[in-house]
Amino acid sequence: MAKKKNKGQINFFRVMAVVGVIIIIVVVKEFLNAAPSLPPNEIHNGSSPTKACLECHVKEIENTPIMPHRPISNCIFCHEPS
Picture (tube, rainbow, N blue to C red):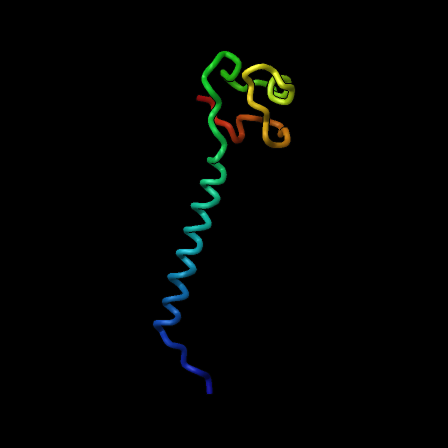
């Protein structure tokens, strides 16, 4: 004989699965939006080549923050222009 499952238990697990998926989507969305936008100035207008970004942000040039991550192929992927 097969055991009967409680309908309330099945519905509870379905609701918890939906809540879990929603939480995962929100966490991933917030992770992708965590990078600060680029400040508005003449250097950050448009899509600067990565080499130009690295020249300022890897070397310790005055009033330029150091890049706290490995260089990637395009800065605009994470950092939106202002």
